[in-house]
Length: 369
Image (tube, rainbow, N blue to C red; front, side, top):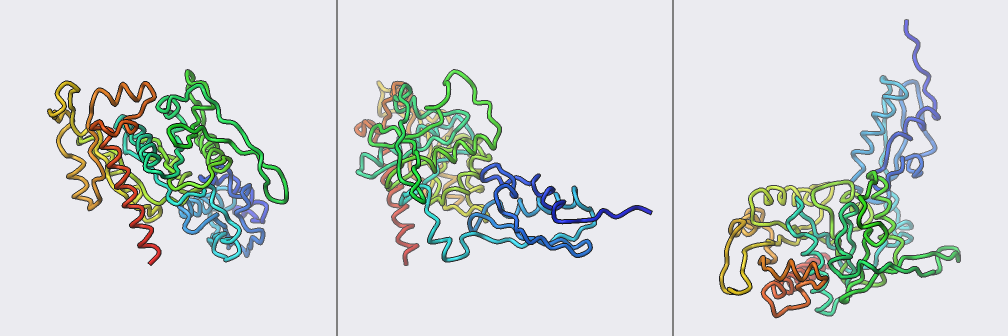
């Protein structure tokens, strides 16, 4: 005859300390997400988990992990009932909760794979929007491969700090973004040795990203552009838990391999748990044009692959960016092509910015109806 394990509240709490909330890397007990009134009746265990916002992209996976933790550390026979709650379900919490960045539109620039020029597109989109007169912030969220400091020719600069009044009259120190080409810019690249790899676990990277968002003096912005890492990762989930995105811009080359990964990126944002609108596709390196033969086009990565994908998925094709020698040279020199709108590549980025403005304005007007 085997002895049944006695279940008591402390045992349940200890089990739940093994469950991590992906939004900040801390366990759900440490986050104060688990209700104090844990009810136990024989083998029936009930409690509630309160998530920061509704909807929360992590709620389903956290609840499943909590059930598994109780079964693993308390009793495999326990009947676990978890009530899901949200902090912003009450009017009071909605009033008190302030967005971490005061921006009219928050846009993620993403790609399914690396090497398609996503960061180049993000940088030039931000600069083009600023040239149109908008207040723009740009956050380099690629913690493990930051590139924005070099693209903006500010590798040697370091963000300053400012003290502001926080809650209860306490002083709060905020990071001051670097300003270049009319864009407020922050990147983890400003704080690490560029010659050394960033050997951080996912939770540490997510916490660093959260600090760059929440503990920085972004001011009032029209557009907050996020240069996201390639693929799908904890960083993307963390961004979704911290910020309410207006939409996503997906970057790809016309290559079939890149398009297959771009489709995955689109599906990630369209997922019912995420539900971020796709503003459109950008076809980068659409064709090669030699500087000495500006009227010639060579489709070295395939022809109009993004255009075809956009038609299949019923999303806009925002721009086709040509591959020219000047893009590489200017980007390495910290002179983004959007600063030269008279060139084919510069004009393409200005067109991209204008279409992004049209798309976001249309979305905003539809939401206000």
